[in-house]
Length: 545
Figure 1 (cartoon, rainbow, N blue to C red):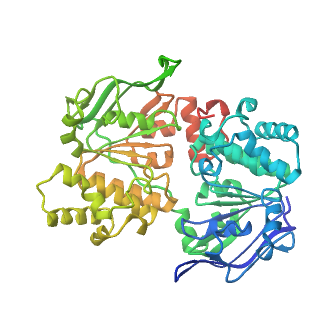
Figure 2 (figure 1 turned 135 degrees about the vertical axis):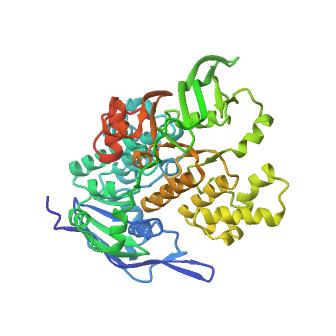
Figure 3 (figure 1 turned 180 degrees about the vertical axis):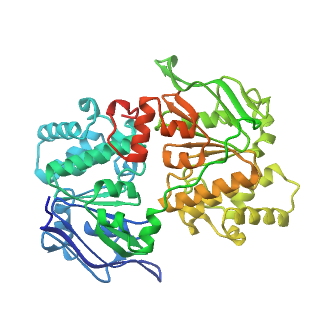
């Protein structure tokens, strides 16, 4: 396919943000082109300026706080940066559309799916209610939503993550735009859903002859989807070229760094004789479904349904599966943070019958690191206050100076400076915030740590750093990990044993190397194909949709 005809031409674009007297130049003289029907990728880590560059095309930045000290953006020969707002409203959603990273915050929670997709058709094409409804139905079918007639009246919260992203795609493609800007369109999705969404975008792009600007930090997606790639760092383009040539022979050291950033290394050596730290047998977590005036229980959601496992000292058990498979529920039940049925033992002692007060002394030995380093740390507390909170409860005899010293040592252990405890979470990057969350868990010197998707919100290179940190801490402290994730590349780098969950049950388990190299179950094979090869996955294997 030839992309000789230029659709978008960005020349010497700069973006500056002003807050009070402070000015920050986020994009510095960036230039790139997108041909008709071509897929171009802007790739780089958080803060590189890729999203700001993409949003500038549609003038969606928070003006007047944002400004363009230099630059031109030509679309079909017209400079959009000097276009009036009325003209931009005609272009947005019609000739140029955008898909945002998080569909739950991009869709209006108060409007049905049918109304939201129909709105853009009525606005740009002047369709009647009946015409718009018929077109919405056609679009929902096209993007692969099952039983679309039933979904027209549904609200966003009634759909899965994959379904919501499909609705966003239907919304973006409703008027058959010339250019689609896709800003991290699969980051919040499970690997199998991610593979399906990418296949869908590729197929629709080919069918419609639509150009696409793909903004992402995931090089696996770039390799699969794009014709050309621009690598951004610190607001500048440091390398560009055909995707094939950039991946085969990267010239800039930053591009080489990104390509080498996948989590590597080996998990600790498997020891089947190591003492059992945590154990459960036939564990069940069922949530009642109540209906009627008297709220009688008519059925149950079987989030965890008869699961048994053993976690040994110094070892890592990886738990993988899609959203809704029961992974996090399993971890919370083992930690006695939600009710469950079935024996749970810690160091040979039954803990499933203990009260909250009886569990409190054991909390020091059992810690948790959450998925989102933004939401897991209170913005009102300093880093020192966040980390010392556990010490105040578990070791109240410590004096202020002793606590401060312990907090400083914990921060240094995770690769931060001791005086970082006097700052607040918003002053740190996402990777640094996750290090703070790990320090909060490690300051109490636990024996068992549940890691719930601790790297999924992070850039690839930061993921690799956090994996290396977790491995180092495990080796030094002989820690036991329960590592929950849908990212099989990270699980492979950390886990001795793996269990694969689907709909509350274990569909496959065994040594990590065997499960990854020779999966027995169709569902496991689909997960591995999606995660490691990014190939199309059979819809029948996907739970969420």
